[in-house]
Length: 215
Image: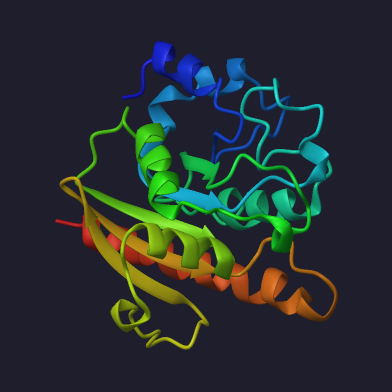
């Protein structure tokens, strides 16, 4: 189980948070410290970077993916906690880049290998032989796979027609199953991706994890 000291240390990482939300109050360190038994590193929800709303919030612990009145963050809460995806609830949430920019096309990660090392460092408090990394969006998935040394020929086919992209890799004694899901902040002509297809993708991944963990 994650210790409170380790929780405090992670609270100083501005992109770090957890896939669990407070229905009755703020998502502050007091809330997460009361949920230590639920927090884990078996699943990581990975974004590319924080949007412009993060300006001025850098010192607020675990605010990433928990921005008040953020439609995309509320979607994740609804699709994960609201759907009771038990394998994903409590998992780590973070970003590959520390950059703040709503326009992800402007975000450049020049050294994907270093970004993977930074991600692995955030996960060091959890000794997990197997992890599931859920990448939000294609750019996150492509950058992570590049940092893991994976080429397109190593990607797995989506046999269930859920518009998933998938890959797997071994890193420092751990096996990582990597998925690309649609952006939780998809709107306009892409609204169906974020509102209809994303929850189906998350449900599927949750079921896959449960199957692998079953005796």
